Image (cartoon, rainbow, N blue to C red; front, side, top):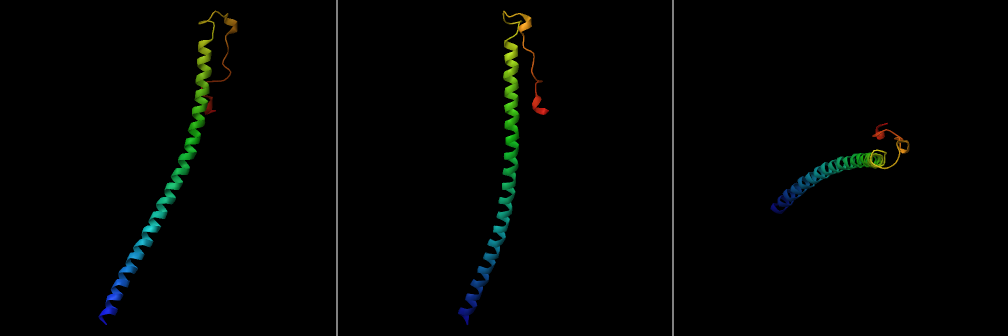
Length: 93
């Protein structure tokens, strides 16, 4: 009978360990799901910021070109000055 009692206590411990593992798995799955959602949100934000950066870079290049090529800093007549084709920071439109 002593052997049967020993087997039951080992079994009971195994059941406790398995229950704890089940709880830890559910907890881990929830954390993974939350992290996947966060990754998705960050990817969307990154895409938006990359587009914004691209537009700002284009504006910067265009404005630098305007500054570098007008009648005040070249030998060209004022009538050859380029007029801005769009407003700076037009990415907000």
